[in-house]
Image (cartoon, rainbow, N blue to C red; front, side, top):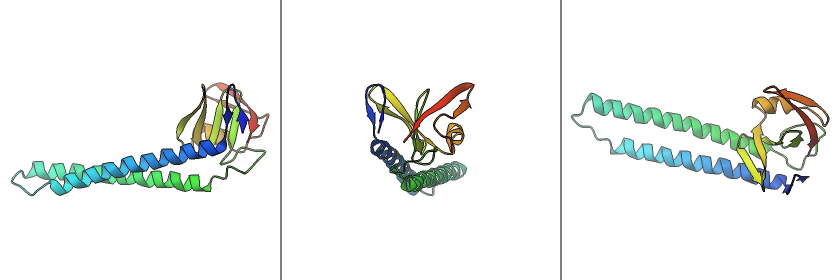
Length: 156
């Protein structure tokens, strides 16, 4: 756990937040896929001709796009399953909670902002620009991101 201004950050809460983020995303995508499937099935062969075929093609494209999104969400879930929040490391790695001079980062998946009281932890993946810069760094190291200097103050 890391103390922030008014609260404690627990990595169990962070990993739980990330799992919930992925689960909610997968449910939304699957609901959308079901809706597209229903629309495709309700389309009946009619004398509408080209208009009918264009509608079906658009629905099939949407279904493919949703399928890709579902695959991405499954990849995020697979990454989360590899995160070891008990691993204490001297350098930033998957599962690290990093306190910088500017903010806090949890290295796992890109799941946005986790609120802790009035403060926030940004859940990021190692593939994000800031994640790539932080990866492998140690306490005392500095990084430059978007013309802002960040110093790593602690790693949990």
